[in-house]
Image (tube, rainbow, N blue to C red; front, side):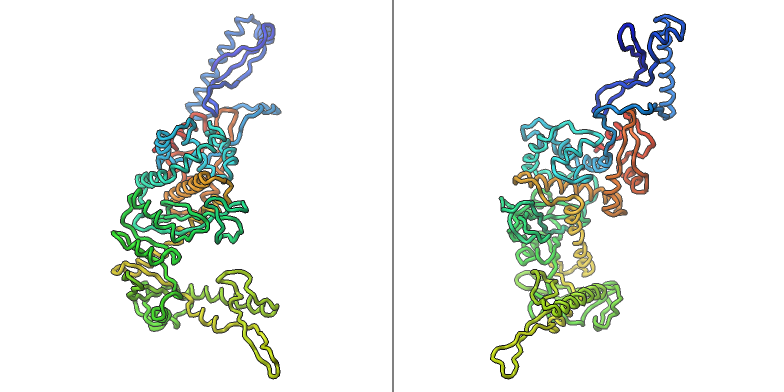
Amino acid sequence: MKLTISGSKNSESLYIQKSYKNNQGKSSTTTVRKLGKLTELCETLGTDRDGVIAWAKEQVRIETEKYKAEKETNNVVITFKANEQMEYNQKKFFLGGYLFPQSIYYDLKLDYICKRIKSKHKFEYDLNAILSDLIYTRILEPNSKRSSFKTAQNLLERPSYSLYDVYRSLSVLADECDFIQSEVYKNSLLTTKRSNKILYYDCTNYYFEIEQEDGDKRYGKSKEHRPNPIIQMGMFTDGDGIPLAFSLFPGNQNEQKSLKPLEQTVIRDFGCHKFIYCSDAGLGSESIREFNNIGERSFIVTQSIKKLKKEEKEWALDNRGFRRLSDGKEIEDISKIDPEDKDVYYKEDPYTPKRIHQNLIVTYSPKYAMYQKTIREKQIERANKMLAEGKHKRTRKNPNDPARFISQIAVTNQGEVADKKVYTLDEEKIAEESRYDGLYALCTDLLDDDPKTIINVSEGRWQIEACFRNLKTDFQARPVYVRTEQSVTSHFLVCFLALLIYKLLEKKLNKKYTCDEILDTLKAINFADIQEQGYMPLYERNRITDDLHDICGFRTDFNFITKQKMRTIQKNSKRH
């Protein structure tokens, strides 16, 4: 505390002021108490100027002792003046949910990675600050780079870089994309156990708000069925569904060509040599199987029963020879199983389509069979409605289009020259499709492994599909607004790192909460600046916030947080 005298010689005013550090970490002062004008105090106290100054210094001493006593008892007294206008450009609201992803960011030592990158490039901006803010805003308020920069202004630690620096950093991030991925993976091994003995692989695509092709942005089959150019992404996750690596390739390229370059990178730069490759049938061609039948690598891929040769298909569709997965008991005929049965049944047989000796495993799920039957019955109803309305053509190239059940036959009436075309329900096609209800096939070169283990590994593929859903829905990776190839790469790198950090946070929480619960909680953790003295939390404390604080090693759920305490919290969130 200190005494401050301001005003002209004939109109001096006395104040008690206190020094503090503002949001930018710069020293500033605030008025604790206005003592009054010198002339009025001389009259009230019945003394001269020296006497007033002596009295004022005593008041400073009293306020200082009061402040120290309140500090020792953790009590904070803040004075508000009713009807006093706010000052211009004084920020009151701050986002604080980023502190928890920040804890994971520094666990992955991304700040050190940025330092290594800076040693190889010539730039003056703070790459670590830019990358971290892009990731935090992608998690809290995903948007364009310009909007993300505006959002970062509301973080407790405001950026010291410019928007121009953000755009300049994109080319550097794109150049170092592979390096960042490999280093982050290695650093993640120091913070958590990675299930890297099983690697799931899949592809998806993202559309651009453009009409013409440009670079790798090409017309292809969009997952969203949009007419815009797309770019494709291939991604590996580990056995827990945590992202491992990704790559981008042109929208018109066959996705099978994307696997080998990325897998070779994972083997060379990530140090992953022994793993089981797991994917769906679209990324499980014979050449891909051969590629993963080398050294210590193996594969488990789904197999289309419809594409099997006649002998193997008849064996797969035969209702006999199945065993219950839970206890291995042989079942006489799966068609006699109760549709409400929740067990899974399987049978296996040696399979060598070309050069690789494999096991063909066929599973049957009564629950899945009932689901497929229900869906087909609804499609048949729609097909009958189309027949009644005279709509016979397929509306789109979709394997689930109900018009596939409509067939055209020619009827010749006596005396007529030309055949009459008649549309009817194709009962043979319906019966043929029903033969596949509940059936699912796998191929693997793990000839001696337990089928139950192999089936469980394959069922984990839903995790990489969930990752793509998170990227598109929760982190809004599309539509993509940036234009240049380097900007596109850096955009998806930021999205990938945001997903990785979220998944590691989710794992630390023991997967007790849904994605919506975690993200909604992070977005709600905000603070209000109170008279430049400290922060008041604006969120509700609940079991999720308790767990977030526990796993990250700091707490923000106090009724009031002083400036000094908040700086300590920020420092703790950056500990390695």
